[in-house]
Image (cartoon, rainbow, N blue to C red; front, side):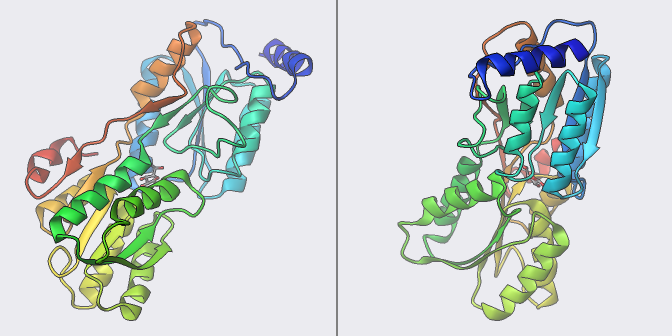
Length: 319
Ligand code: GYE
């Protein structure tokens, strides 16, 4: 491993940090692979971690797992420690778009390839296919757009909306907002009354909803960037004597079991799925990279959706 770091440094010296060359990874019997997770405070993250751990074990690879506990600064330190250990490859779920970009370049300069999972980084700071192998994940703009289109159809273009945004500065929060707002921009009677972050967390979603509900009692739609905040918002609505799913439509993204059950129960009206089971695809992509295949800079997951019509049958396969 030392020789690989040395090689990486040599390469960096010769071709400079702006090189378009991704670090190679040679064929080995087994690998030591890093997975830098952003946090573990929700079922989505736990399902993703389990999927990565199971797949690493199934292939006989050692997984160096870290949990940044919701701190971009800790995640930077976690990736640096993986670089210092000389892991063969790093899977990174970058919490925010900007702060994690520099360590991607550090890994590249140390000769360690990086694959981004589920969240992307700012392309002006670190570019897919150049500084890291690829981004594997959902098309978040498309997810937001689908929610906006469903809502337009369901309400005939009349809605007073509260938007609960995900983690500030994260790619899913930025893009789910953009896709949704683009989809309704031409609808004069669809108004976003307020839009505030709930950090993708249940209790924060509940608290933010509680405050916004007092300021905007005319709300009749909540669009939450993930299930956790939607579930928090449902508690706030019920505590205020409202009927989620009926007098206030609730829309969400992710599709965990608990939320899909709430679609069955009629409290959530529409969910666009975002599948957390990354393991098989992540390691297949790594192995394709090792065998020298051309890897697309973006590998997009297909997302289904859940409505009152299909939620019951979807429950069994929801994470
Ligand atoms: O929607 C959310 C999680 O980055 C796509 O992060 C992921 C999002 C997911 O915490 O629940």
